[in-house]
Image (cartoon, rainbow, N blue to C red; front, side, top):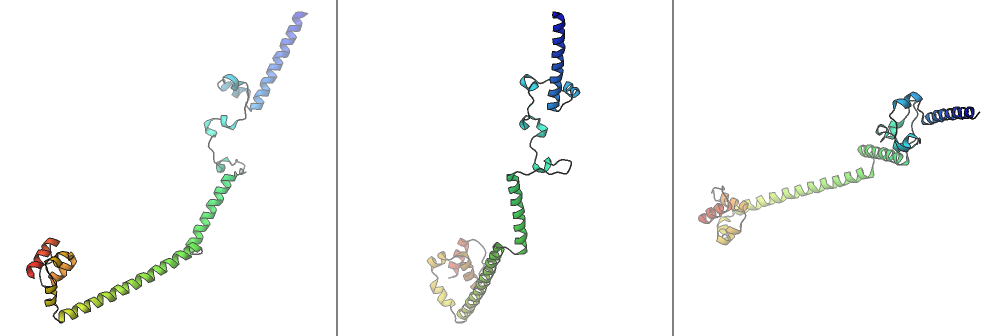
Length: 194
């Protein structure tokens, strides 16, 4: 009788072991055939089925929200951070569009500054032009009055050396001399002519 009881308890234990394996495979979502194909896990991994998303293989990592949409057409709920970023992008695009149309305060301020700068440049150009005309009229009047003699008296060696190259060239041109060369050459040429 004792042998019969051992056989019965072995059959019950084996049935129980099979049932446990089936439950484990169902919980893990793996059929018995697939389980045999996979390499056997070591340690507690083979015994404990975890639902840890970080423990999955590398192919499932780093997915974006737009990639998580199911094939059924359902979209995955976005996280707060993703929603905020999308909203920020939409707002920036809308602002760029309004700015291009000239409807933003920044655009209006930019245009006002641009118009003020244009007016300022035009006024400066007119002032410069009138100053140049006045200077040419004054030079013409001075040359007609014979100011060349007075000019020679004003130019001594120290004054000639203090002149800038452009001024030296004007004096040389007024005397019909060459304006080519460096400042030293121009100074020597002008001093020789005085």
